[in-house]
Length: 374
Image 1: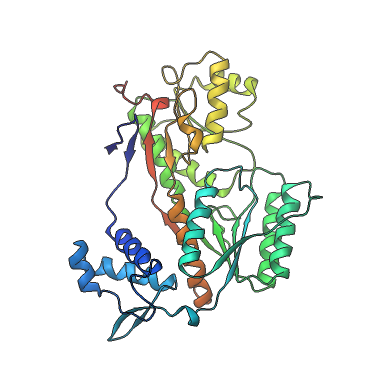
Image 2: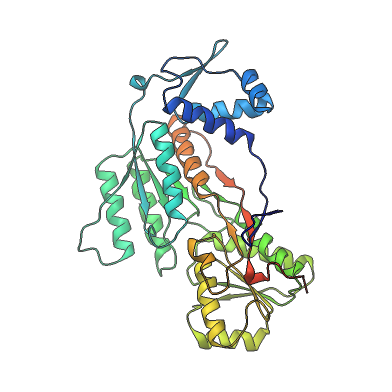
């Protein structure tokens, strides 16, 4: 655990030498320190310079190769790739929640940076003005990308909408028919144990649910409720599994409630039914709405009820009580999505993969940060 000095505590941060090597070489290549065709330091040289193992240095070089920045020649070394030999590809973004769910903006920033490094282009399709629903917008973007024969699409499946499952499957069927590779962002279209045939990049959501629930337990909470909105993505189901793991481990009842946190009467009924001392919310937006309703009902956070979210949205520190949450490595998710797409294009026969990145538990005042456990 590390203290940030600003009232937050972060769990799970560790030095990442592989990332340091990758970023150093990436910036050196993009800034022209190493010219096209020039040999770059070997694994042994990098391991000495950065105090890392050769395995770690080799992983960084492999990621640079996937990103299209270098080519590795057996028995000779690694060389900066000639740009003229690299065909510029165009990748489309299909994220209906862009601008609504805050994790996707930094994910897109990470994708844009990785795309520039691999000399590829990332585009946002444009919907016409007569589009009146999120589903129509997503379907129109799908048709746009198919018509323009993009090299691949990064797709965040729709959620929180009745009928979104059918729309998601239709979009993926259209891309499959057009032989356009797809990398899913954050979530699959099917609930466990079913799985789509596409690569997915996100976090370990079961672990995220476990982290926040275990922390609430360690803070003295014994009557913990999990709250989510209707038609949530399968990622929420995995967070619920992590929550249930903790409750079962400690022999406590697990209460999962699906509803609209904006409805004060519903929240009031939950308080009367369960008398909770803690809430695990499926995301920060749900937690923010719940916090408002609790304040209206005269329930003090964190004195009477402790509260957690997921994602670490920008506003999580600006709420009336700063929110304990799980921070997603959004920039890294975006970069990993691009590398996954490039590898998928180069090796189309590979089995579908789940690329799950680590996450951090960030403790703030909604769980009594700075106070002694009860």
